[in-house]
Image 1: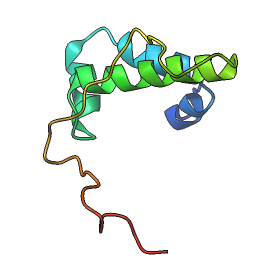
Image 2: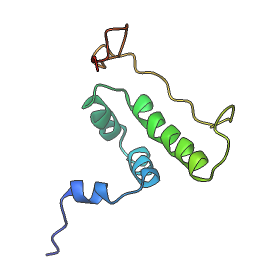
Image 3: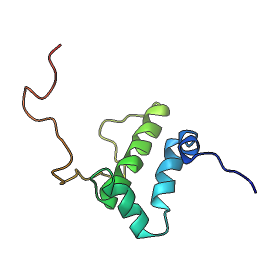
Image 4: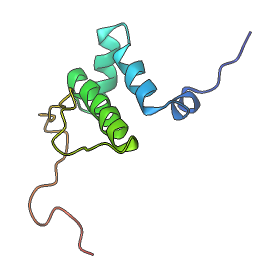
Length: 95
């Protein structure tokens, strides 16, 4: 029987676009929800951020103008209290 490498090795070899598509193409909604829940997000929020990242990366990689450009995908901010936010002037460590 063919032994497959560990999944972490496969994920490390994927491009950003391939990783975003792999998550988006999970056929069962329960699987997408379980992955998102493991990092305290909802599935739509988790799906939108990698897609946006890929769009921004492609614009920058092709030396196009990023300012005032329509990306087509706009990620929502997570509403979960489990997701920490940097708020206030004392949120960042002193240098």
